[in-house]
Length: 135
Image (cartoon, rainbow, N blue to C red; front, top):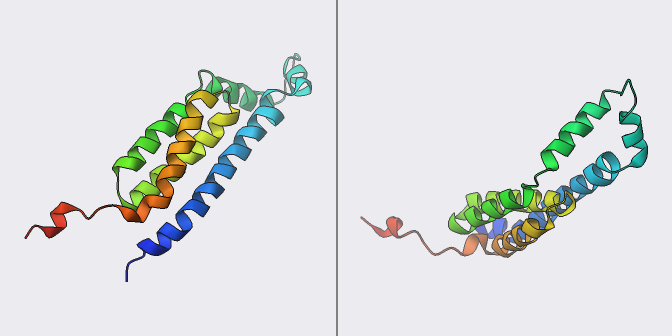
């Protein structure tokens, strides 16, 4: 018995959950760590706490923003692979795209999210591999 119908049924739900997780992490990183003025003032003191090094690293990882480009590349890979690999690439594209929506990269992240969401419901609908029919 094949597990692909079960994978196809839960693929979109899994993708939406992964997108929500990526979007939430991007929102937390931006509005709770990067942009708060109180945290910025605290990190500008003579003896900044250790949290400021994490904040500075996060800021360095956000500029230039490449989350959307990575998400779009993963979504393209999802369209050219089959079955579980396609679901994995599409879910990773949704996570990276969700991060990029809040981490200053909506221009690239939006097509990544759309391409990932369009791919996930079609995970089990690939045509058969022609190599399977060769004797």
